[in-house]
Amino acid sequence: MTDEEKPEAALGAAEKDIMALGIATAAIILFVGTGGSVLPRVFDAMYSGGAAPDPLLVNALLLNIALIIFGWRRYRQLTHEIAERRRAEEQARELAEVDPLTSCLNRRSMAAATDRLRLHANAQGQAVAYAMIDLDNFKQINDMHGHSIGDQVLVALAQRITEHLPEGAALARLGGDEFAFVVAYDPQKRGRVDDLIIRLFDNIVLPFKLGSLVIDATMSMGVATDHDDQGGNPALHNADQLLHRADIAMYNAKKQGKNRYFWFEPTMENELRFRNEIESGIRRGVSAGEFEPYYEQQIDLETGELVGFEMLARWNSPNLGLVSPELFIPIAEEIGLISVLSENLMELAFKDAWEWDDAITLSVNISPVQLRDPWFAQKLLKQLVASNFPAHRLEIEITESCLHDNIGMVRSTITSLRNQGVKISLDDFGTGYSSLEQLRTLPFDRLKIDRSFVRELRDAGGNSEIVDAIISLGRGLGMPITAEGIESEEILSILKQMGQLKGQGFLYGQPETAEQVRLRLAAIGKLSKASRGPAPATDREGEADIAQTVTPRRARS
Image 1 (tube, rainbow, N blue to C red):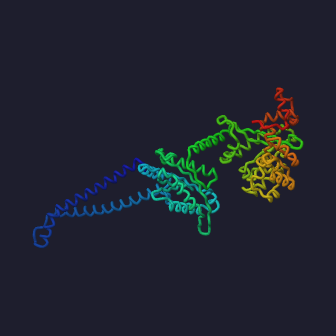
Image 2: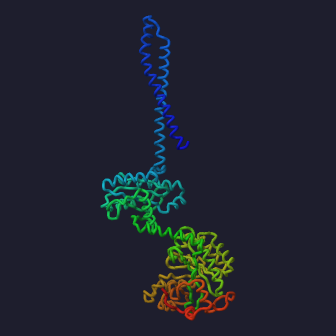
Image 3: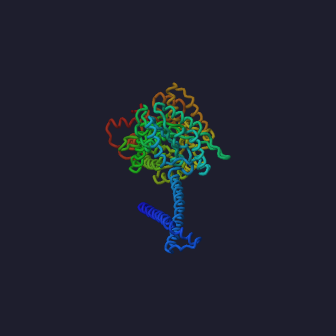
């Protein structure tokens, strides 16, 4: 039945009910009239032998009795229909406003409840705080124990929240593992809301005991208010705006490490808007080829010879300008584009490095997200074949964090690549949690000392027990060492005294484009024979810069 047909049907039913009521009323009136005339004559004829009443009046009386019975039955039916209709309307209202799992309000009804509470609170000079709650890593609970256990956790969570909320507060399940509550408070005493939230953290995230299972869970929370930070006049935010701001604050809590809460601040919205702009830019940039490889020199510290380059991702966005890889790489990982981005860059890098001397290696950083792909090794080897790039010249760098996601898959991937001649380096060594057992059993070819430890050589006057320990460990395991972050002559001099190392850093110059690298290699005769041709024409000043191929110089700003 369409929306237009429903009022017409209701109107038709109402007309029938009114008609039945009118008939019954008329029948009662006629019964009174005819009964007053016919019944005395009937009794007179029965007991006194008087004249019989007029048959027509008797028939009219019987008809009135039949109509009264019909009207009574119809009245009973109407009463039953009204009761059923009320029950159906109540059930429909509950389905429309209440979450069936937790019996909390749902997203739709929460908006109306928030606006009602806000208007009532503002009329009494109060403010409202809208808090959004999200369980951390709830998907893992569902994956490990099943959705039925996950549902039990949600029900228990809703009960715990309800027990600790003050009277008059509204609680809703917005969907999945997201909850929200709204509570009125004195805008001059916002600390009371903080006290409430701290009590919730102390009592809600206790382990959930479900039969023989004990589920540990934490939560993140974002809070927004309809008053300004100084507790002044209401900012007149509606329910949707409060939800939006609380959601932004909750996202910030998750970004800061989870299991905490934040009040909304305008800067959070600006940051989120910028992040969305970055995300959209990455999607466009991958398709448009805006990302390009830059190359940082790797030097044999003992001989000063250029022995390789590390490929670094760079993004010069037409809208955002030069974006730091520390910003766009984590976002690319989150939105699932890091693999295609890395594959595109490696394809360009293999093409660039094919022109270099065969003795010069290419190092490429691999994201932990890529190592979760069981087909990563096959995809990389296929790229090498398609680019006709020798596997022995490629060095893959993985971080210690990769070793904790799926050690079995990481071992299989490393083994597959090494079997084809690809070298494997453990990058940023010392900043993660790799064990000596992992170093002994995983087939790494090289350790790279993180730049934070290398910089300490200057601050500690050349005494760094950590760097000494890493170098000694590398010698013991038969792994050569690369030191990152060489930015001064002082650090370089200290490292040279520690043994045969390979190094890189801004002391040898900033990362360069493919064309700049080609000019540099051409100047020192380290292009491959296939690509070696007449030296590119450069001015004298440019030749002087290129001639400083491996001569250390201070980092350019």
